[in-house]
Image 1: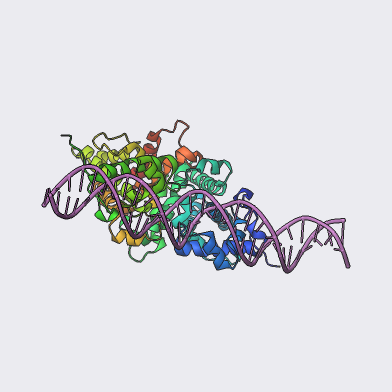
Image 2: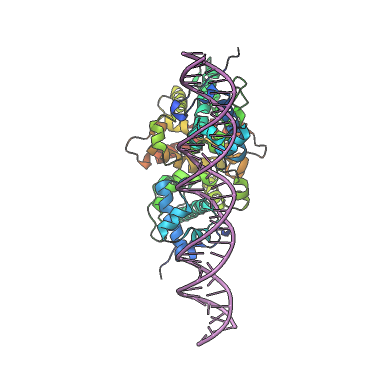
Length: 223
Length: 223
DNA sequence: TTTTATATAATAGTATTGCTATCATAAATA
DNA sequence: TATTTATGATAGCAATACTATTATATAAAA
């Protein structure tokens, strides 16, 4: 038996758990491909169903609508990233080294994690960059928040915030700086690739330049 | 005759210039109200037409689709803000004072500017916080960019970047820091109001705390 | 084994959205 | 006065965002 990493998901996000059937796993797999390829606006359950070889009604049995599916994917990603961060910084004791490691993970292009067979993390990372903020930039953000849809994101912010405080317990804005790092990592990546004049990254489009920028920003901020 | 501030707009954004007719001005005025109230996703030209007292086809004569209208509003805002910044920092010589002033303008709740009768800037500011990034977070960002849709935004980033360099000409990331300030000002405002645990702002929800955070971030970064 | 619950496929149908086209009329301009 | 131009009114159409129904296959429970 293969050891598969399981990310525990909020059941309010789905009607039927997509991890528990082939069709469900295909919905996840193909929706990631389709959203990454054509963007969230042009993504429909009908197109997804055609790609999978099922019907629109079949997809609706798993997810109420495409927004819930997006929130599911985004939550899954943050849950997976939390796991990666815990795993990769587990044996690091120096908080500064740890925080640098976290920044690197947040701003690096992700490689496909083969222990999660139905999720291509490198595609999902691209979705997070372009579509991630649409998960919360809605008129119903507060209802969604009450249903805990953003818990994995908040947990990650807390992890980063705690690490900031471990570096400097007197720093006044650990949560704001944490959410800033996470968002700016994606924003600068998007700008670097699509609106480069909004950044100082060279034409090589190397994520390492974003990591350098973020490290400079963070460690000067917290001293 | 009243002196009205006119923001010069990119003609590719509209089919007919909305500033030149009553109907056009109503499209701007009521779209701002409707998007601010119900969010961009649920906004349709049909609902807008009903509010104005015209027909859907009437709105389509001015704007190709709702995305172009959003980009129009966002561009208008950045153009207007550029004007405000130039005007309000005109007589300031010290670049540090000037940069502080800019940060304050970027992160402050805007009051309605009475010299622009068909635009309520305080509502438009709310739209920018919740919907602004959707103007560029699309699959067609590069085509839109080629058509100069984001020029006012880039111009503003350049202004801020120049001021950063005026404070410290050796700072390595003036454009990235500029786009970071602009985006984070809105993001932290959104989080403060809807997902407060992602920030360190108190329950008073005072924008001044965001200004303090940004000042701390910027001036520690550039020394 | 038989019964029964469960998942999926196939199909249909409906309201709304996004958009285009046509025609009549009113107002502004030449 | 003739004519261009903007608007209003209406129609229509393809795609989107769903919901409902029935049939069939399959796996679990009796």
